[in-house]
Image (cartoon, rainbow, N blue to C red; front, side):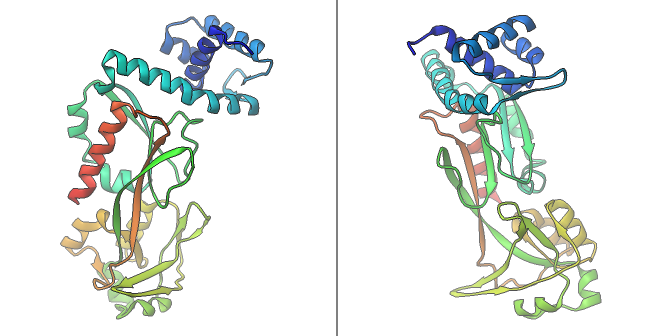
Length: 301
């Protein structure tokens, strides 16, 4: 098929529809009428010979063919936008909208309450956080950046290790007063241990302890299993059970005595925090700025 400039124009409109979620919002975003957006999509579908979108009165979703086309075309459109931004000097301007797929632990327990300075530093940028227990498709979901615990995934994504977080095993004074304090990690087999689901496997995380060159895995059971780390922490504070948590989120509670670090000599286990973004040669300035800001926060903890 010879190059047709109308295809490029149609891809831009398709991208706006996918990211905005509707023809009406896409029209507002790119300065066309609703009917203009509809005609542009229809022309693109006719040129390609496939239906790209399923339309109902309430929603617009990509067809299977539309999703494949969008995922293959979007990176090229991004590259054109990056080239234009670089040529105009906008590559250094932090502005527009940034959509961040963010770990459900990292946002409420580490980042929340520390975002004010970033907003003040970049008043022309708005940030939208998407919090979910699974790692989604960044391109298909219109995500600029993801911050997630765990090993890298997705060959088409650029990944960067920010830091490795310490894992602590903690309990409240109320729990220890009722059930006693375990003297060694192996004693946890007889305790009520709150479980947390690993989203990549759908099963609870294993409990591992590392001290120098010594590493042990301890089978644990408990009355409650969570996918929400904040709820797990609240139940631990209430005395329901023992929990393994990322150390960053509990520093103040350890200092106040609301939680007790059960095994301070067994802090060798680390959980890596990665940042991901779609593969492209020059990440936008807004992506670089947010990565650098998060990097500064985690290194100060």
